[in-house]
Length: 565
Image (cartoon, rainbow, N blue to C red):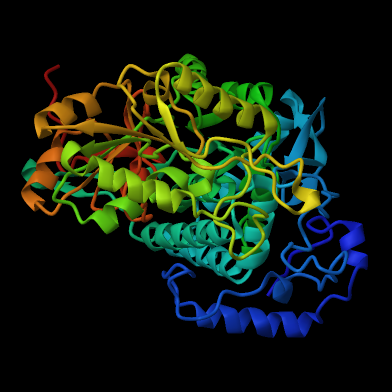
């Protein structure tokens, strides 16, 4: 089993602070932990204890007495290796030159200065992917399946290291990051299982003639990811692409460039042809070079609506298919007959995962007036109890927002909401942890807004932060009309004990992903995507296979040609 180098995960100061566990002992510990958590079950639901960070990373002595409540890894990280990946190795970009600062959200420290890839580097990555595609596309589905399963196995075994990278670069809690990594390897396993089953169909024609169809790969696909789920988004895009026989050049967000490179290394270690999954780093210019490259056959993008529009324009010039997973302002409808306990928990899950930085969040919480006061009181009470702080600590449930400009943007929405008449029922202010090394981190208290109206900016626009807006309603007809009065259509949810009402409501919601008596549950078996301005195309499920393949029809004549000439 291969193990990742941790030199670039932990800073030199942290590495010197203590002696690393012997390799054999770490391997034994990984096997024990892997066996303790049944496959397919999130670690938080497994009966085993959650593994300690110190079991899988080098031992670290506390920086000073009395700091037992602080993570010894937070604030010590430096990135020392190149973050581009091409032809099976980390490389510095061949051109570009512009540097982007990459921050650790928990501390506000600069992790590294990221060199952005220029047009030459993008072309090298695409040409490398084209060469690997010739090999990969000729392998059988079962051969691709075995390699993808091996990649999933490596991710599962290195879950703790990858989750730690994700937390350090993204700011979300280690508790959540572990779930993201589990979803990632489950995604690869799911599409590995489908790789061997991809097939066309046989159609009998008159006179013994027949036709058949072949499902073929597209070629080199471009993936452009978001910063809220860096590793998971990469797996959601490359899973179906690789299963269908494609190659991929992937551009992560410049805010979170670190973990995707580890995914590329794992694919090489698992036995994929070198160059099959390449990583280019950078911002808008790099993405433009990638989208406009003549050898890129398809583009899959997760991000904002304005950027999605630009990508559509670029793809149109090359007649390239596009999958767009964009923003949302989704409704969550709570009827008076709902199980109140589940409805409150569902509202928290719909708003505060990953510091509220989730595109499908149900941020417009419509509550039937009969239970408005009871529901609101309970939501506020539980929101105030959410543990904020060092994201690498086991009991933290809300970490830091991605960066200072984004934190300022979210704060601006709350200020505007108050000016427009909304009432801040709890939170919304900046939070400064007790740990001095976290004082420059990007923290805020989760916010619940009351007295909201449909025409307020906080109700109409995507905030992408931990801000819940509660709105009362009286009738089913009324709430459905209000819920659908938005340019977005990514998700929606309903809580009710009336199963007929539940199905009636989700049928009427103009959204691509709907939940009944739960929220923000996205198994890889189910297609995910939106309506209207939230994009089109689907990720996950069998539906994604159609996005990464094309159908060829073959007509076979078994007799003589009948000609009119």
